[in-house]
Length: 92
Image (cartoon, rainbow, N blue to C red; front, side, top):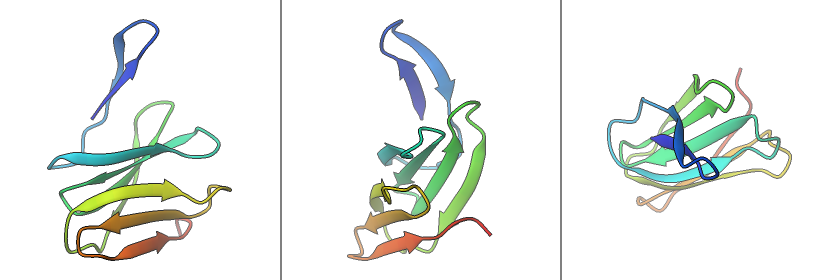
């Protein structure tokens, strides 16, 4: 997944980890993290400042189509083609 700077039209970061198509990306409410959902059936959370992979969330049995942060940033929701919405809590 590539993060572009639209002002300079240059690549800021390349986030590597998903093994299939990324279908959804969302910034956390405080802009410190990105969450991405993929056809590889995972949700990944990335540190926005350096692109470090923070967490990989597994449990979906089909493509993840969407991800969304709870307004206060403590929870993350993901929806998949299997018709399931998962609510992920804070990291242990």
